[in-house]
Image 1 (cartoon, helix red, strand yellow):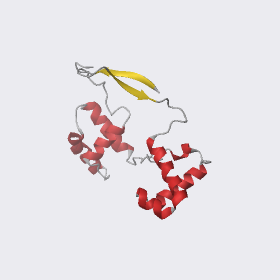
Image 2 (image 1 turned 180 degrees about the vertical axis):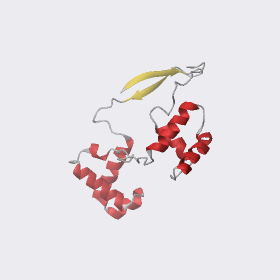
Image 3 (image 1 turned 45 degrees about the vertical axis):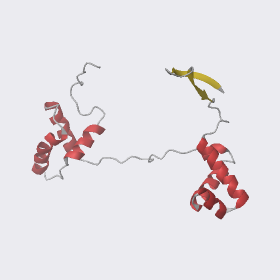
Image 4 (image 1 turned 90 degrees about the vertical axis):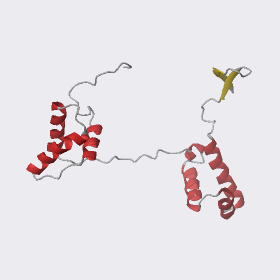
Length: 159
């Protein structure tokens, strides 16, 4: 382990140091170590004892054991996986409506989602389309790569 200087504390004896281990494959996170410890305990003392001692559910134990076996008893298999959805929800709004919002934003760049709503509502009523609520307008504007702006944002004093 190495000691790296983080900052000098006033009123303390010396430097505040942080002990950091190298992030190699052999260094385990605390959660991974705890998971492995629970699984070893289960093998030794059984299912009911493990559930009572650690407060984990039966399904959790079976899932982790299967994940460890599938990973070839490699402890890297106990790492946490990403919890984000594999596919993001797609916006299925008509292009006409989105283009209308984009045109309105180019004419009036400072109009917020609430100020755009009456114009979009009028446009949709003329064409017998389902109208977007202001909140959906805001989401469409935020999801657009250029934020539906026709000019660059003015920089403030801090950049």
